[in-house]
Length: 426
Ligand code: PSV
Ligand code: MN
Ligand code: MN
Image (cartoon, rainbow, N blue to C red):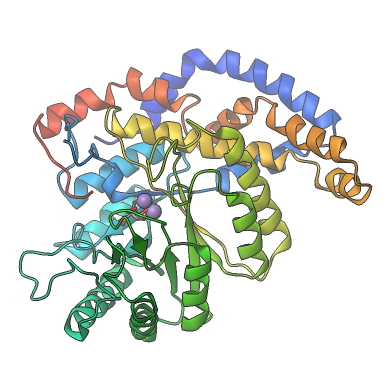
C-alpha cells in the first residue's frame, strides 16, 4: 500500500481547524518568551529516525509469538512499511537492515523502491548471535570473542560481508552488537574474551571504507546471564578507541541496569567525540524494547537535553545514527512505531525549549531551584502542536495514528498480503 498526498490531505481535513487554533496559541506564547518557532519547527522536520527492519512485524518472547496479520514477509514489503510510516510522520526517512535476514535479491530494485519512498539506508547490522543453516562454525560459545580462531574468522568475514552489502545500498555505517559472554562463573577468561573481541573488531575495522563508521553497541546481560563481553559504555569506548577514529559507542536505552544515569553517559561520550549512534525504546525492567516514552518520558527528556546540548556544543562528535529499537508483542507494529516516533519528537521539541543561557546562569549561581524550574518548565509544555506543524509543513499527517486508522492501513495490508504472513527477524 502506498499512501499518497491526497490520502493524507483527506485525513487531515477534520483536524486542521483545531490544529491552527492550538498552534497559534502556543506559538504566540512561546514567541513572547523569546523562542524562534520556525527554527524549532524546521529542526523537528529535519530530525529523521531510522526504522529497524526487524520491528515491522510482531516480536515475541521466548514463551511465544503472536503474529500480526498483514506483516511484511520480504525486504520489499518491509521498505513499503517504512514508506507508510514516513508518509504519515515525515520523520522515518531511513531503514536499518539486519543481515542475513535482509539480503536483497535485486539491489537495483530495492534501491529504486527505497528512493521512490524517500527512504535512505542507515546503519547495517551484523548477526553473529545466531547460527545460519549452512554455517561451518557455531556461535554457541561466542563469535568475535570465541576461543576458536576459526569461529572468530567466520564472524569477522560475516561483518565484512555486511559492509559490502551495505555499501551497495548506500549505507555508511556498520553496527556490531554481540551476544558474546558467559552463563556461569569460570566459563570464560574475561581478559582473553575481551582481547579476542578487540583483535576481531580491529580486523573488521581494516575493511571499513573511509567514509564509514563502526558503531559498537553494549548491553549488560542477555542472552548470557553471568557476563557479557561488551557489557557497558566503558567496554565499548575502550574497544572503539582501540580500533580508531571511525569507531564509536552506540547507546541503546534498554541496555542499562535499572536507574543508570543514561543522560550522563551520553554527555560524556559526546564530550569525547565518541557517541556514534542511538537506539530508542523504553523499559521497566531490562531490555524490554517497549514503545519509546511509554514508561519514563521524563528520563527521555533529560537524555534529549544532553543530546541537544551536544549537538550544539560538541563539533568533535559526529552526527548521530538515530534508530528505534523496539519490539511489539500486543500492538500493531506500525501503530507502535508511530507512537515511538511521536515520543521522540516530543522529547526533542521540549529539549529545544530549554533556555540554555538561563540554565548556564542559574548553574553559575548555584541556583538549584531555578535550574530545576528551567528544565521542568520546558518539560511541562505541551509541544504537540509544534510536531503537528512540522508534519504539516512537510506533507505529513496532523495525527499519524488517526490517519493510519482512518485510512485502514492494516486492513489494506491484510488484503494485499494475507493473514498468515511472517517477518524474518528477531
Ligand atoms: C539485542 O539486545 C538487540 O535488541 C540489540 O539492541 C541490537 O541492536 C538488536 O538486538 C539487533 O541486533
Ligand atoms: Mn539495540
Ligand atoms: Mn536490545
